[in-house]
Amino acid sequence: MEKITEDMINIGVNDRDIQLFEGQYEVKNGMSYNSYAILDEQVVIMDTVDPRTTQEWLRNLEEAVGARTVDYLVIQHMEPDHGGSIMQLMDRYPNMKFVGNAKTFQMFQQFFDVDPTERAVVVKEGDTLSIGKHTLQFFMAPMVHWPEVMVTYDQTQKVLFSADGFGKFGTRDADESWTCEARRYYINICGKYGMQVQALLKKAAALDIHIICPLHGPVLTENLGYYIDKYQVWSSYEPEEEGVLIACASIHGHTLQTAKKMKELLEQKGAKKVVLADLTMDDLHEAVEDAFRYSHLVLAAASYDASVFPPMEDFLNRLRSKNYQKRTVGIIENGSWAPTAAKSMKALLEGAKSLTFVEPVVTIKSAMKTENISQLEALADELIKA
Image 1 (tube, rainbow, N blue to C red):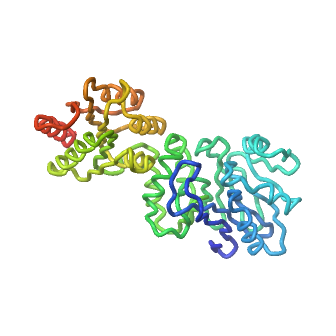
Image 2: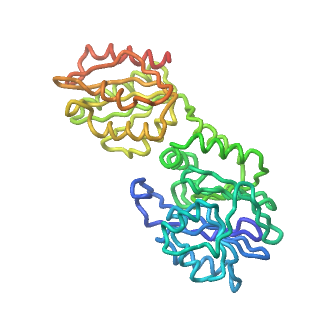
Image 3: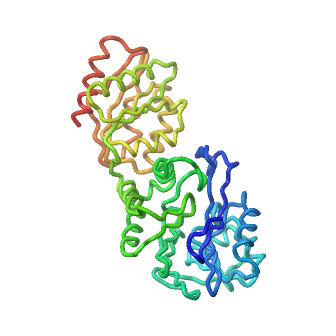
């Protein structure tokens, strides 16, 4: 457990056994599910935890609350990693009331065969709940990243309970950069909903916030402007850094060899940062993260079945689904008899906003030859110029 203020405790759990969050995101340093107890004249619990960790959470809850009863459970997000232990809490405190919005309780009955009507305290934008010296105020955050999401502001101690906002992969005590794993978390989970995140940030800008309590990752208590600025950049789809991601999907290694040569040329010509991702070996979601992080993207892929090698197709489908935009893109294709990768990659990015494709498209036939070097140099020059 973690004491946030004199009467506010994080009773959440660090899950060190999970390997894939949501069945797809690799979490080498585990995952945290945060839940908060506010001990005032009335006791409030802010969200529950994933069913994987219910029993440890209940022990933390008992230690924090003691013999007191829980008066309210605030349900900010119904996703099972936060709402998955609601029934166990309900069984333990049969007089406890649920605080949520109208959409919360619609979804409640989809997850649980229970009618919450008699216990429900339905709140809307700006409503408040006084629990003693604390006054909680609720703000709706639809599609950040589910439709029922709301956040809670404690007017007394200036604490924002931010739901999935400002969360990250990894346990709370993981020895790793907040920015890297928070970026990978944001882009892959919330990235599609930049407009909705911007709307929430505007609401937050009107509040005097001293502490941010997310549902994943560490509680943020210092330099809050840094974290808020990162969310401003990420949700507006602006590049975070000047640099080039080379995303490569190679079958037999020839396309990868070409991508490595491209990296070498870009570095020689003064590119500030060049990162090479092997889409057949590296973490796909980290490659997606880097595509949003950097200002330029080079796609290097082999042709396959009159289209493009599937690892590249998967990568581009994910970029498109997360609203990839405002970037400069170069293309390298490989094809032994009928190169089709370039056309297919462009087609997969159709509909993406504000992408600038630079020429030339470099076509390798089977393996890189001396004459291809000048084409790669020309593409590198145009990328540097752009």
